[in-house]
Length: 216
Length: 216
DNA sequence: TAACTTACTGACCGGTCAGTCAGTAAGAGA
DNA sequence: TCTCTTACTGACTGACCGGTCAGTAAGTTA
Image (cartoon, rainbow over the protein chains, first blue to last red):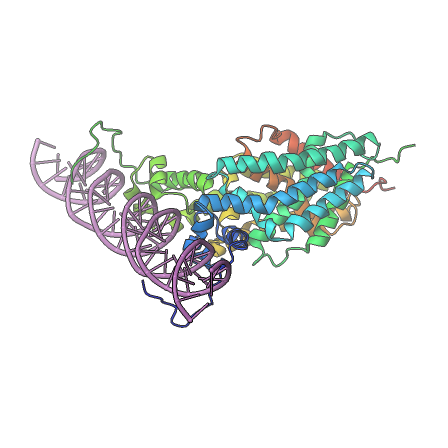
């Protein structure tokens, strides 16, 4: 086999430890932009600065790479979200605000923001991955938010709304914003700033949940 | 070419007028489930009860079929939404509720509910289609909702919130619900009923927008 | 019922890409 | 500096699928 590379693009390096992480991160980027099926393994390899063969040294298949990329990216965020929800010593409205902004900082504003869009896009093709995503991420975050709202109701800060429904409604603006930003940012010139959008959302939601009369 | 069909699956019928609509509808179903790239033309053809060749009698390419399917499905809904928004004779809170439920009935609860998910999933691969979707659908609906909220502010029913932001926040629960239902319905056993979810969302949103003190 | 038109069919072609593996060279050890 | 191990490369293969078109038969006209 001949040595190609007439202009010696890059010096070859051996970095066994760093590769899997770099490849998974590159995969997340490319999958996020093109979706699973439309992504070519060679694009991911190029994006990670390796050849296609190297990808197959560390991952069994395209699908395995996809799962690994999603899991590696999301797990820390899940754990951080759980930890935050455990703190029940503060007013529910504060926790709600912190939850929304914390999620934005950890997921929405980073490369992880691609994951929800990706999972939505590929839910038909990867049912078990979708189930994993739902059970180990959405569900846990949802339960945490339910606890916050129930706490607010118990303290007399919030109206007695059905907490399970309200929790989903609180999530919706953030979720939608992440999706919109990833899908339509290019030509959605009126897309608001995350900060001001989420501030307004938290404001409307906490007003919407709050009791009209201050408790006696 | 030999005549195949040893068990004569179905009697061949010639129905030139009905085909394009049937094929586009079938395409929407299959695209919605699998995404654009992962959908095989033969699956669409089978779903529409014709052979692959017939699809190419009526549509130039897979991409043309995709666009035709999306446009045919969404256009009536856009026009109906615009018409509804023109009615400014009623209280803003009523219009808001009607807008949300009308959208659900026209889009979310029907096969059209697949379109938002589809557009999100394929936005990277079809930028012009995404732009068309945004400009001729999202934008128009957004402007209509802004008008409703500004009307509510002017009438003293709503707090003076930034209408452009609030409009997006009002859309978010409905949009999210459509996406969740389409992506995770199979195993999301705690997914609420649309009716009660949207009712609760409208309740929280209108409470959140409302002035605390009734105007004198 | 024969001759004709055309909606419809499905085998085939060519391009694309996931996955393979013989070959290459970076770096370690002596 | 030479040898050895193995991380890495990229040309290649086989499967798959979008798109084509020669062929078939449903329906129509005379």
